[in-house]
Length: 339
Image (cartoon, rainbow, N blue to C red; front, side):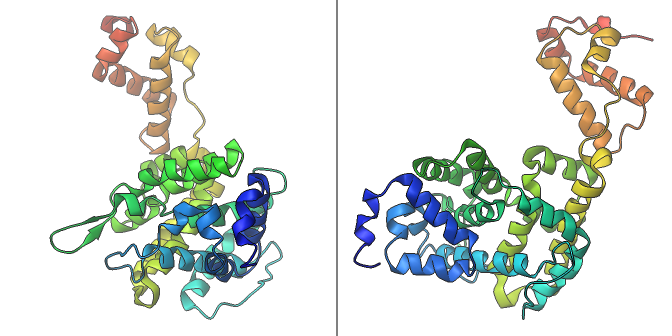
């Protein structure tokens, strides 16, 4: 393999993609990727990932970005391997008490999680393998966003946004599908959201839950699992028990909303339609109606609106507060002031 590695550029991008994906779909992903690096494969097919090496981080991180990424792969595999399947049979028993606690908290979702990972985005490539690819790329923006403050603390503000074009460039070169690109893009862009929720010290409110899934959709489920693995890889043996419990509670709250409260918190049934807005408020078809419906949906999801009367009052107030948008759409303020 060492002798043949320099011939990799002579193989097609599709072949490189497929062989890499088979490794990410397999077992012991962490040592497999480490071996690829030792053989010189990573620098040839994933040069952006190679740039993570020796990029130091501040506490609570215990490792540089490269080693943290590898440990995230290991923690993610440990978590997924220990989650029971539909029949409740566990494929492995982790020696890590943090993993065992996570498994006990997520047990109620075992059937949904099993179904979730059975459906891939592209024929021949599994969702599980794609999640590991996203984990490999999740901190890809850190080298270009790294800043060291006068205090010595290292920050990576905006690394989730900085990583997106880097990831897209590499995945396009390896001829991944548009659906797969969008998946990994969403994971990278949103992978800090759960950590921010935990830092707030409270379980996410309905509005926070709605906005998270509005921005991530079904991929939000995958982001929950990656966030758990990311936290384990960040703290290692220094992970405070209360921090881990808080992260698990946020994860459970989000998964509960996705699988058990869709019509309540995430996609509430519409109390008003675009036609209703045109008829009752004299609005014309256009972007203004779309913005209004989005604002109305969020207000329903957050629990501010529970019936059609409240919805009508909300629309009237929204229009009064956003008169400039309505004016741009050719609607006079008095046109929607109805009894």
